[in-house]
Length: 382
Image 1 (cartoon, rainbow, N blue to C red):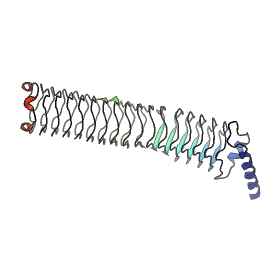
Image 2 (image 1 turned 90 degrees about the vertical axis):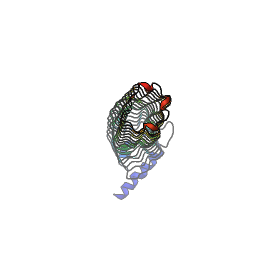
Image 3 (image 1 turned 135 degrees about the vertical axis):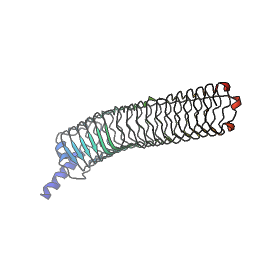
Image 4 (image 1 turned 30 degrees about the horizontal axis):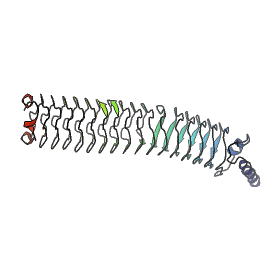
């Protein structure tokens, strides 16, 4: 029995050698059966399996590093423990295939069909999936860090405990996608559509969300420290209890956004538009909010010490019991703003328009800088 097995694999080695990488080589029909019967750890690296018909098969513990599988058909196959490291698999068909402990590190999967495929305990590190079809695809305990997922429709894709650190997801469609068990540190989500996406508690440290659509997206409790949300747009996005220290929101347009109890120290909000946003109990100490717009925003009990509000438009702001020590309101619009019970020690209002502003009950008003230089002081309430 052992002698027969040895002869079979000696023949297999010679036959696969005949398919060595070349522009015109194609695997013969018998190769499908030989691969299915191959022993564990059999090495088929640097071979050409273009257009191979491997559908409805099972492959286990084989090595295909740097091999070519252009337009190969693996539909409905079960593949476990296989190494496709840096394999060329453009336009391959993996429809409804199941992958268990498979390594696709650096693999080229551009244009591949992964409809209904399941990846479990597998590696897609630095894999290129641009143009692939991931409809109803499931990723379970997968490492896809540094993977290329730009422009993909991921609205029906399942992400269950997936690492996407440094992944490229530029302009990806993620509407209503549940990403709550992913990790997205330094991920590039520029111009991505995250409408209604669930990212509560997700680690997005230094992630790039610039220009992204954040309509109704849930980032509550997420780590967005040093993240870039510049020019992001959306209504009713949720950032309650999020960590956003040093975050960049320059030019962001986020209406009715919920930032309650969020940590935004040293954040950049220059030229941001935040009408009806809720920053109650939030901490924005040392942040730059110059030239920003906060119409009818809520800042109840917010910590705003040393925030730069120069030339900001704070019309109708509700900042009752908020803390504004050393805040700079130079040339800002404070019309009809409510500062009832606010702490105003050394706040600078030189040149600010305080028509209709209500400072009744505010503390340390005697220490406010430039109050006599504020516009329409006679129309404010003290």
